[in-house]
Image (cartoon, rainbow, N blue to C red; front, side, top):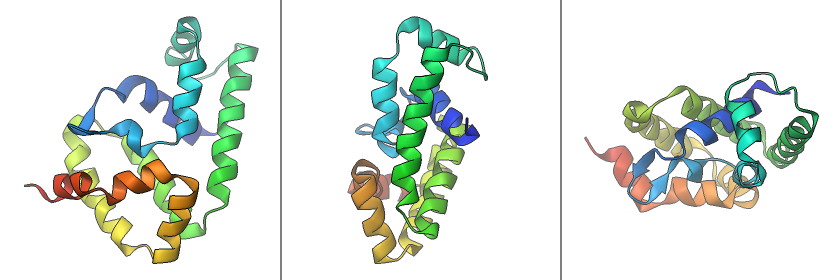
Length: 146
């Protein structure tokens, strides 16, 4: 199972309560498939996942693999710069804490602005929630705050 996908899920479970600003949450920068997956997990499945890097429960493994495949299929529709941008964003979100969000928002606002219009449109089609968050005034204001 892809390390990035496991990172996504761990981020979703452990960091969902962190917020960039009042109305922008980390979950707004992650694929909907992860939110749907988390909604479908039982408390016991969540506990198993949080406490283990390797998922041994066959039913949970199928759920994780299905979500991973859906995300992979969607992301594969993007061109390389947009894919790289999203993969880097997801990795950095996983490895950061709330103290580092300011720097990350600045970094990714800058990178987002460097993507071509067609690359951004691709993200909009595949991940509209993430696109809307990155283009929001609140995200831009947060990234520019000192």
